[in-house]
Amino acid sequence: MRLRKYYIGLGIMLLMLTIITSYNYIEVEAVKNGYLEAVVLDKWDVVIANQVNQSPITIEIDGKPLSKEKGDAYLSQSGEVMIPVEVLREGMRCAVGLYDQNRLLVEKNTKKFELYLQYPSVELSGEDGSVLCPLVMRDGILYVAASIVAQQLEYEFEWNQQEKCIRFKNQNPSLASLPIQYDQRQVGRSPNITDQGSENKCWAYAACETLEASLLPGEHIVFSEDHMAEHNSFHRTIEEGGDYSMAMAYLLAWQGPAQKGNETVPVKHVQEIQLIPKKDLEKIKEAVYIYGGVQSSIYLGMTNEMSESIHYNSATKSYCYIGTEKPNHDIVIVGWDDEYPKEKFHTPLQGNGAFLCQNSWGNEFGEGGYFWISYYDSNIGINNVAYTRVEPTTNYARIYQSDLCGMLATAGFEREEAYFANIFTARQNERLSAAGFYAVGGNTEYEIYAVPEFNGVESLALEWKVADGVLPNAGYYTIDFDHIVEVAEENRFAVIVKVKTPGNEYPIAVESLANNEFAHYVDISDGESYISAFAEEWKNTEQHYQSNVCLKVYTQ
Image 1 (cartoon, rainbow, N blue to C red):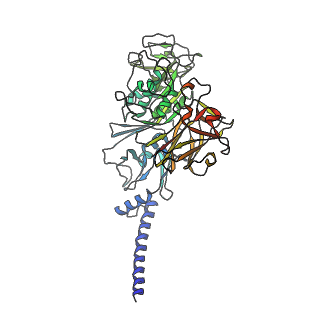
Image 2: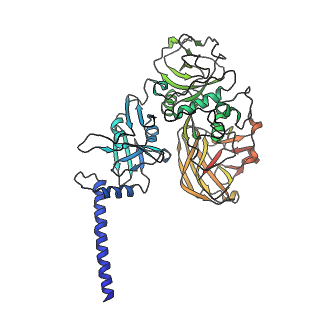
Image 3: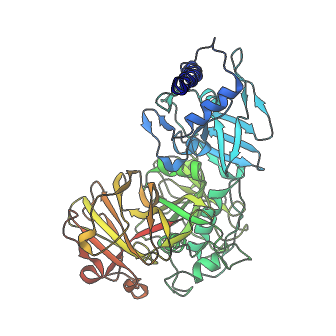
């Protein structure tokens, strides 16, 4: 009798659970399929959002998936899909700026719209198309309603809840994303004018100003050029000068940047630096538009703001050098004008067009510190540096590295594909979160593998893949792992990277002692690196190539 009552009670409980579950399923399906007649209670909206947000939402733009480094989307409790603002910058190639901590300005050529954090709602078209909180700050990341982005930028928008995928399709792909003219001064994205004086530190001034521009208008931090020039691993005198590669190594090693006036510790971590292809005017302009400035090099036949040169038109503040002299000065590209008249230059030119550039000779030079350089100048646009991922110093707990001087040479096996690995010893129980390395050319394909316990080269196996993808330009990239890897204190661990760089037979970046003007500053005894052609036979780079592999690991 007791057994019979038990089964009866159990049957009733299962029936009730089935009814509740079925109701939940019906409500979820109704929302997923967009049935306008469905009546969904607020509590079920919360349940649906929580269910959807338990796993990542993918984002596709014009059929191309966006890498997860650009941020995760989520479904709000009001049923609106929210996407990181970074998607607008990286996926839709928009100029994005947060002004006064509450006004988001988005521009794509002639299209422009603004959203405000303090406004509770924005009305959209439709009988009941209001979206609560179209702009949200969540865990330090700015999110915007996907439907608003699609409407304002004229994209088709699809949210497939079953596939957990957001799809955008440009309705007007023939429209150029860049305007004919652009001037960062007009949108508050140009850093303060500086004056290097008689010191040979233009490379540090240009790097700091470009880095400052990458944070504007949201953050206005003035970085210390002196700290960059004096606290890097090259130990050169001011008279010896430097170049952008020294700035890159200093920043990527977390030796800086330091804030001017408080030059004790880094105030930011630079995790990505892209090298824009030489003389690719459209990509250079796009980098200025999206990332806020590009550091470049020119030959300048002048020594200060009082100098004269046959290549400089002081009346129009325009400069153009045509010749074979190598670059001797760094500036920052902060705008352009495709229709800038060629007649404004002393040199006869084939066509119009010029970059607006910021110099480091004070505001007495040019137009308050700015001048125009023709697209046809021999050197402008050959070396192009953009700081594309700058983060708070809390992003990772620790960096493991042995390449403090950065990429000084490349290695390989006369084939586009190669493998490289670095070995480190864990300082405590940690989680491997990301790896950073150089792509020596555009469209570099990569795969990253983790080895939590390294016990000699025989343990360098491709068993635990933690990330893969394609890198658009040459430069340095930090890749966050798809899976967290735990390592134990005092244990040796390894990270392996496979790269394939089209058209480059030496695709591995190394810090090398061989044939390099910086070689006497390099310490290759601080690391243990290996390279391989097929991930079978590994060669120690210190013993065979007098080099350290440029591969850093970041932990939490």
